[in-house]
Image (tube, rainbow, N blue to C red):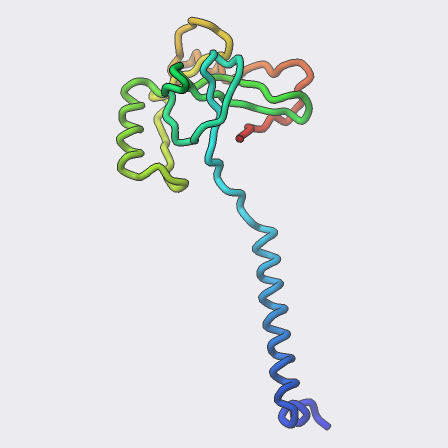
Length: 165
């Protein structure tokens, strides 16, 4: 008996076979999508109130400097190497005028996962952690390169990766 004739005489077998093929195709598509999943964007970032001695997690849409427990908080770029403990590479904050613009933009867009602030380098100020009253340097300044080209602590091996809460 031919396959076609058998399937015409047994429609249940035909439907079950077709359904099985469809389920297998859907399962294969799901497994492929699961393997290619893009990690979710971080919802929190690290900040510090003590010049980088310690850091804490807060909403990534917080615009530094901001008040945290009565102290001025700034962004802390925390990195971790292949070995060693996490460390703060440098501190960042918005200039006063850029902060006002960023707050206005967030209010317009809504502070959600799709909201992205892309300030100009001249809007950001940077300094080394634990540097005390050293003035903040505009990120657009040539002097900022010396801050971003930091030395990693002893025992911290390459590669360095940003750390998020």
